[in-house]
Image 1 (spheres, rainbow, N blue to C red):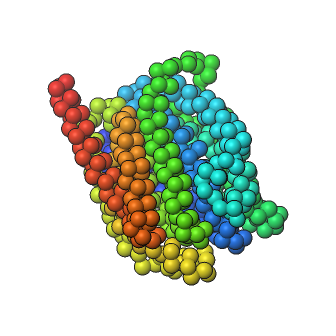
Image 2: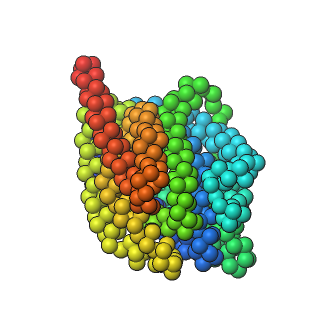
Image 3: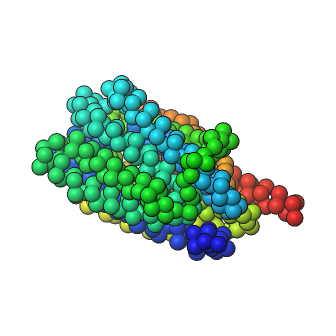
Length: 454
């Protein structure tokens, strides 16, 4: 048994230890990426507050485009981890080869359609006249990095499926450091303004893609191997990828769509409100770092346990991760509630923006404990090949709860901007209850099926 195969077996035998083995490198990479996001926001804020708002209007669509591939990447991770858990290396290799082909096709397709429809996109997003030209200027550059970004998503998903989280983190750190270094150069030295931030991003993405290609195809240093000479197109693998991944993709798309409409509701209170929420979300991202790292480790780990038929360990691993997630939620929520105004002042001197951003943070922290349960439960579903529960819960949370409540609170009950934030907390509570209950029931069914087989 090779060293990399032994790694998979060790994860199955001790999943609680594996949670941290998989989580900590991912967390390190996310921290570096977060520092980049803060730096990027800081440099863009030095252009103008309209520039921050313009970048904020870009985020939902960029997230929309990439999220389609994130979901499919989760499908690939699940298939590869299940195959390796069942010791079926041929299927794992074939799934990885399908992933690369899908990455190239989707990257080119999304890039082409995005550049053609860029102005209608921002009109749909509700960008005001004083923002739209800046938003498009950033978008016209960042869109050409979609191919590299999407390929990067699939390469990371392949490595996640085999339990290698260190390599993607190393590459992410390299890309982030390059990005941070290029930001002031392109924005201020080359005087490219907001477009300079986009050029810095796609340059770093290109370099990271090259690193992945060298790793997989030149060094061949992964457990999963690419043997395109033996490649056999499989509708079954494509179908399974979409069965697991498309609900996850659609969940991301609905979240992105919800963010677009969320921005439209917020912009009713002025472009400064959009900027305030955009800065406040940078603080949210700090909370999401450990939660996303913990939950992302579960897709591969639960897939391996499921493939190895260790259903007995799936529930205890899920609850173990939820417990630690709640610890992070309470600590971060308490700290953020008090430091919110000071954090806002790093990026703006406008008292109105500081006040609105602080209010956003002080409402959102009450959603953190619920977000933990919903997010982690969704990743467990994906790990054993079920993407539909997460999609249905996300759809109901955004379309049925948060958006109608936000409109009711702001337009009918005149609760002001706070009404939008309150609706967000209520929707997170629903997602937590639904996710926990649904997953508990499904795990009971799996446990009974295994007992019956025995």
